[in-house]
Structures are given as structure tokens and as C-alpha cells.
Length: 460
Image (cartoon, rainbow, N blue to C red; front, side, top):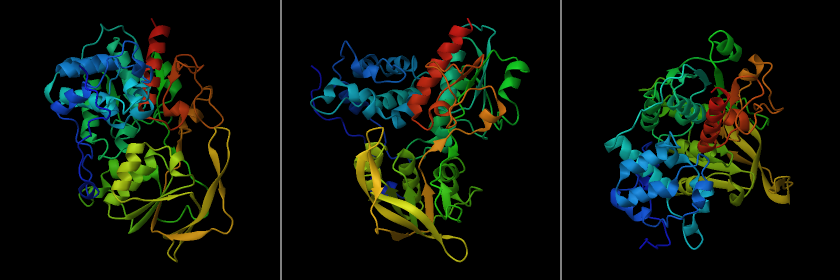
């Protein structure tokens, strides 16, 4: 008989008072016993609604059944038929709005902890199992992949397994894209990302770092001079958005992109052991309500600051994962809902001294159905802070667009593609945040898989 408990097995975690002062992983992972108990909650539905909620179509009931049976190697191999980065997805994928939202067990209780079980199987394989690097015979076809984030790595891995020679070009000095520079160690350890990347390298994928496509070479040069059969653009969305309010050029104002890159990739929190310093002072305001805002706020807290999340809507409208909001509250982050910055003030030396906010109320719904925030007249006040971190989204970097004039793009900067990632420019494909704007890791991976399938179809 299945385990009919209405609740998931809790995830073991560091205590909030301890983890708020370190960058070690918060979630500790299921033990073997807990994993089996949670797997036993799965009903193994024949119609598998959970799979329909997975952007990469992992055979979820099949891998959970193997965990239930104690065959963790088989569970991992089933996952990896569709997901080349399972240890990553098990940690950062928003399962609650995807696979788990379709779980039958969620009708009268909590859904099965699909993400936690995926993480368990992947971690077990990395530590105790075997990870296959088998590929099809070489076809003689060659692909260039621009960007080593989740979209690029997924596309590269699928093409390599199909027998293609793949070269990935990464602009930074370390592969991994947003997985390395954007997500803090306490959510996604860099060592784990490197292991996943090493698994992809083992397929024969070559990764060239410090290679800025659009500067060192163009898309056309990759096709015409280097004779690649196809190019996939997965360059992400690394251009930070700002509110364009007074004071954004003051010292102490960061984009979340820069702040997290300094923290995650350059290990600024270990200064002077690391070369890159970072200073936040005693009070920090983080503007925004998404996962990036939560990451920035929780990093600032670990640097010793009193931290405020400032968001112009209510908590119900926050796009961040409920788990991240919960963790942030446990760690002592202050939430100022229905507040919006209108200016940043500085002292006589040009450093941030306060952020002027206005209180908001929710008005009529906008085109997307979300109630539009409206400023309350006369409600302005100054929030004393020494650092402001702006986390209101990113746009695709315009470099690819500028150096590939015949590449179709949207007015806001994203690359125009069909549903399979074809760009309208012969032999060029794209996916992930470069197409959609900033989104989730798993959606970028799904786009990388679709583009790889299109490349294989177009180049038999």
C-alpha cells in the first residue's frame, strides 16, 4: 500500500540562526530512508499528470518507483534521459508551479516531493553511483553554442549524445552562466554545478571561456569561417534593468546582477582571501520581489546587514518561490510590501544615505490580470540605508543583436524564434533568457532541448 500521508516529508535544513551567518547550503537533502518514505507517497498514476507539468518531460513516476524499490542508479538514469542537470533542477526548479502542481496527491494534501526526490537521486549518483558518458557514433556535424548557462549546456549535451562535435563559447572566465554567477552557494553550491558541467564535458563537449561572441567573433564568422553546421544562442539576459529614478548613480547602488556576481562567482564574502571586496554597510534595501531579490537580500544578510525587501505590490503578488520567501523571513529579512522607491539620496561624499519610498495600494487589474499598484499621495518617507540593490529584472545583452544585423529580434531585445528555437536566420537557433527575457532555469533547459531537436531534424 502507498504511504497515504497528506504531507511531504520535511527537508532537513540548517537552523535559521546558524545559516544566516554562513554561505553553506541551507537544504541538506533527504536521507535514503526519508527518500524511500516520500517515494512511497507516489500513486504511480498511469496518465502521469506530473510529467505534463515538467518542461523537459522527465518520466517522473518511473524514477520515483525506482527510488521506492531502492534502485537509485536506475532512478538517476531515468531522470537523465530527459534532464542533463538533475542535481541543479532538484534544488532551484519551481516544482510547486510545475510538476508538483499537477500531482494527484496535491488535491487532498501536499503533492509528492518530486524535486526533493530528483535531488536525492542525482546526489546519490554523484557520490556513490555511476554517470554514463555514452554517445552515438560521430556524425561529422559540428555545432557552436553561445553561452554556458542552462539553455546552452542542455543543447550542447543533447547534440553531443547524438554524435555531434560541440563547442561552447562562454564570455566569463568560468562556465555555468547564471548557475555560477546568479544563484548563491546556500541554494546551489558551485562545486555541484562544476560536477554537472564535468559530466557534460565527459560527453566530448568543448567549453571555451573568456570568449565574447560579438567581440572575439560573430555569429556569421562561426558559420562561415569556422564552418559550424549550426549555432545555438543561449546568451541569457545579463543586462540589468533600473527604475530610472534620481540617485541611481550614487556609490552603494548595485544591480542585483553585479552584486550576486561579486558574491557568487568572485567570492567577495571571503575578502581579503578573494581579490574582489564588497561593502554593504549596516542597512540594505533590495528593490524587487522575485527570486533574484530574495537571493540578494539573503546574501546581504549573511554579510551582516539589516535587510529590507521593498516591493510595490503585496506579498500575494510576489513572483518569488514561496520557499525562498519563507527562508528569507526565517533568516530575519524585513519585508516592506506595497512600497515603491521614488528616489535615492546621498551624503556629501556621494554615498547612499537613504531611499525615498512612497506607499502604494492595489488598483484595477492590468493587462495580465494583476492589480496595478497606485501611489498614495502624501505617503512619501525616507528609509535610511547605506546600500540599495536593484532586482527588478534583466534584459538580453544587445551585443549579439548589434553584431548580427539579420538576426530577427523583438522590440524589447529578445531574439525572435519559433516554438522550436529556429530564428529565421539559416542555421541559427536560440533559446532561454535570450529569447524570453529572465525566466527559470528549467524553462531555459526546455528551450535548449527543443532547439537541439530542431537542429538534429534540420541537419540529418
